[in-house]
Length: 316
Image (cartoon, rainbow, N blue to C red; front, side):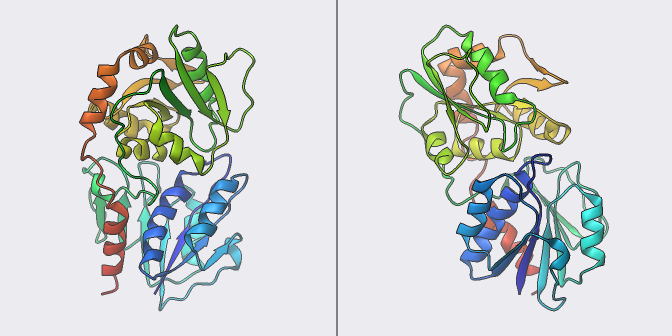
């Protein structure tokens, strides 16, 4: 049996599809299951390094040259692109097909659907089984729940807008933070250059392996409502979220309504932040503490294990 993961990471679509697929692959590889990654990765060396490090037996950059084996290969596909789905399903034969999906994923025939989010309201389509909710959120093995005994003084803040940040979330938040008259340190994770308007409290960091280490120390994290935000929530961090795109609306709403993260605003051609929302989360230690308490036990870090268990059951 082989698991074949099909997803892409580009400056247009971001890195989320590949990163959550890689978390599932990491668990499968740890069980001795041979895993192959098929997809296009452009401009994200940390993503390429992760795929190499976790032990894929093959990384195929050109999907057109991959040939599947219908007797052994389980396709695990995570993409919004209907043309990719059709081409890969038509031109290849598979033992089973698993669809990692959200609200923007096209519907297609598969044997198992998995929604890696908080909602448990997804219905089965046809005969395939649908799994959803916090129990099926795949997390990288390097992520653990770490609670600092007390906050730093001054507090340490991390800001990230995903792997691409095409809406310039990081610097939009930084501009708002710069107006707050308070001592803190801010780590901005971005591929862009720091504007001269930001003062000594702000520093630029490249996205890479040190992100996890710094996230574990942070007292407050600003993130778009993407796959990455769920990683921070799982850690037990105090998280403030912005909605950068249509595919983030569900996470943004669910995290805010459950009081699992502090909503700060949405991107509507430009960032429109809620009045005083950023200042409030920075100034209020009790608000940050309540967010951490609320997320306790929400995500138990066993999502990847459950997903691999369910995929293996398809061929029992």
